[in-house]
Amino acid sequence: MKQETSRATVRIPAFRAGRMSTEHPLAHAVVAAARDAQLPLPPSDAFTSTPGRGVTAHVDGYQVDVGSPVGLLKSHDDSLRAIVDELEQAGRTAVVVQVDGEPVGVLGLADKLRADAAATVAQLTAVTGARPLLLTGDNERAARRLAAEVGITDVRAGLLPQDKVTAVRELENHGDRVVLVGDGVNDAPALAAAHAGVAMGRAGADLALDTADTVITRDELATLPAVIQLARRARRLVIANLAIAGTFIAVLVIWDLIGTLPLPLGVAGHEGSTIIVGLNGLRLLRRAAWERAASPAAAPRREA
Image (cartoon, rainbow, N blue to C red; front, side, top):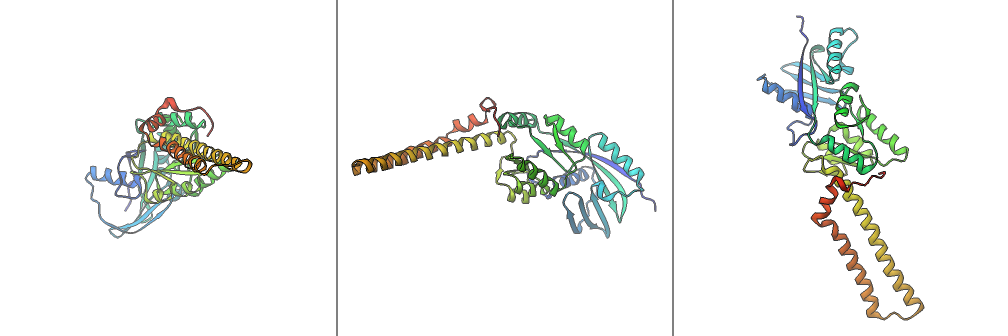
């Protein structure tokens, strides 16, 4: 029996607020669209996943493959390739569906940006002094459409998880300190390879959350520049505290070597420096410190 090739377009939020019942956000979006269309959702078994390529499972006795056109399309699938090209030209990510090795449909997935995405990218650029880089497994046209909406000009698309790691290593080999932000399973290796990995808590996959150095639990994009600002302030405070403590100790030691340091004065100097260092560090706990870090006006224009 000849099987008809169909296509569907599904809009999904690129940055989501809430954890998914499925591991991959794209899977959640497809399942949600099927439920909205009141389609039957039979149980599946023998599920396997290939990072960056797709998934395979048995459904009602059939083997179902859902994944990238690169891995599923064959040379003679001209009609399918035309559909895939049309979807990608429209800035969508094409996902092929096969049943027992025969194509039955193509899904067109489109990202929907959060309202604060463009502002966050602009503030990150101001804070770090470097232009953000988009690393994605999506096709080139879909990735560039999305990047243009948020003001990102440097895009590397069609990447597998190991390709993202390679891109991070290349940046680090050039002397850059890389902060990678991700939430998917495919981002986990790159999160581990980066100088600092940041995962979005609510939408993030479990593997990404376990791998990242920092997890933003509120899942707010605007938190990213503030976190970087606070980290820099904390570093400056640590350096200042080391300088304060070292200066006090050096003065007390030199005084004792060249003269006579009274014991009460030595104790007061040592403990006094400890109190000063502690109070200086507590400045980061003030609400004003967070509000200042989160303010776009507080972003210095300097290199990260």
